[in-house]
Length: 305
Image 1 (cartoon, rainbow, N blue to C red):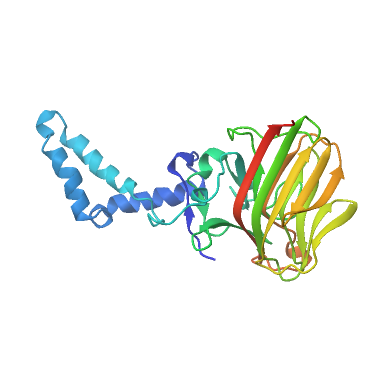
Image 2: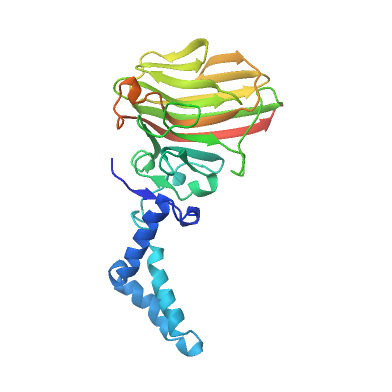
């Protein structure tokens, strides 16, 4: 897997952050190689009209400053026609957790909703133009969140404006719904377990769409599993929908309702992406990984009628 990380420039806040160093270095290179970085035709078209206006008060110093800004028009590492994940799915009410630390031995990197519009990671979170899917990958040796020993490249639901963590109840007078078209493409070789979607409450996961080998099912912690299929093949695309209201969690798989579970919980939120259920202690190589592709993802909250 290559190393190409793209970030929207407004998201770069910490000068010590590795992402800042990547773009800072790239930008410096562009400044040093101005004539090679900017096509001569564009350079002439941009600079000559400005030069003709020096007599109207633009100083040579200001002109040079404008010239140095020209390379910033070209985002390093990304072809202008290459789509970002946000070109395919709406991430305005999600936060992304990646399986890499923001600093050595630190917590996993988190990308806020405001920054996801211009973000991709070539290893863990990227658009796939040929299939119009967003790909999520989480290696077994990746950084984990505080209360888990497994890595994730996963979205966490936020409020509609993307600024606060979503938190709702299963019996709060609202219909909470998440639907997605998804494929689990890869599992680790040893422990072949991956989660692609879930409802979480204030304390723990409430219901998860989980694959173990060829068994695709809904996991509910200590309760019996709800089988969706025992013949799942990696890469098979399927539709799944959660509808939560009136103290019940209902799940549809391929258009058929498979679960109608009476349960009252608060502090709930949706999650989707790739939550790899293995690590090197389970016998898998650190570089082995789980992979999930999401083709469609929608969340809604509406009053019950």
